[in-house]
Amino acid sequence: MDKILDNNYISVWFMRQAGRYLPEYKKIRQTEKSFIDLCFNSEKSATISLQPIERFDFDYIILFSDILVIPHALGQQVTFKENIGPLLNPINSLRDLGQLNIKESLQTLDPVFETIKLIKKKKANKDLIGFCGGAFTVLTYMIQGGSSKDHLLVKEKVKKEKLKLLEIIEVLVEISSLYLNMQIKSGANRVMIFESWAGLLEGQDYIDFIIKPTNKLIDKVKKKYPKIPIITFPRGSGKKILDFIDSVPCNVISLDKTFPKKILKIANEKNITLQGNLDPLILVEGGKRLDEEVKKILLTFKENKHIFNLSHGILPITPIENVIKTLKIIRSFNETR
Image (cartoon, rainbow, N blue to C red; front, side, top):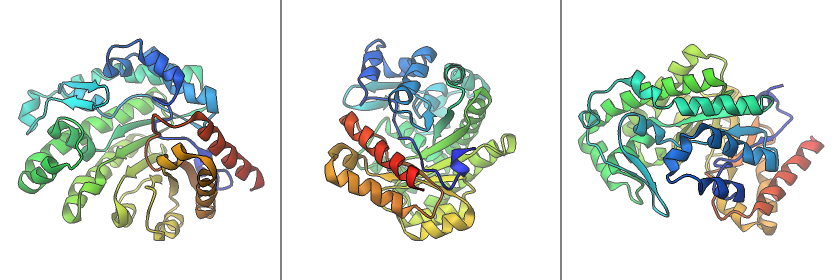
């Protein structure tokens, strides 16, 4: 039975479960000069994707890749610098990307599709989650040239150059839909849309840059693969997540560490599974607080279809024993249901 559809079983996986907190990942990372090269090495990416399954037996495999493979495929230079993060040559408009050919750009991502095929070949009995970044989140990196603490440039451009930005959004929705469809064709059992910077926007901007593009992206995927579950993550939305869940036809919605409690009832009415929402910092802290928080989350969602996850990606400093402890609590809870 599909665990997402089984109300009596709390399945579990962690965002970024394949990555920097695992010593076996660090060992492979040292074999590639750049992170982007690692993402495009199909054999190594497949191995990394499966490392947390072999160690912890999570219920789902999450593809090891990065949301910024999309701007890379569109011809924007993308590098990753240690202790800094992604660095891109910033763009101001579509013209900065030159003559675009979406189908040719998609071919750049062939190694990702090969990674998925390798994962399914090695672990056919475990569901694999493919993913992409939400159009707005990817856009923020493309125009900022990397990460930002205040996102002032993005906010200013949304105010002053909205139409120009929405043109880029259209292209991102198009290539992202093709990218997800190819992931599904290659063997992904479900896909997730990471809209990590949704919380930057309010009012009509939230509708135009978050809700509408997500709807278009889901529509393009569902037209080809109507039965594939789609997970959305409009991080930082706060109360706006109620507008999101009211407008976006997703199967699963991933939640922040705080959310309006009204969503519990709405999700049941709409037959939407809720995912989350352990604070990654509490997972790092461990001890009694971790025990209490995991149990509290399990009880909070006990009347909902629920996938246990974090409220954001697992941190590199996370002690492995805290992951083991969390999984033990969840599995004990499942035995009593």
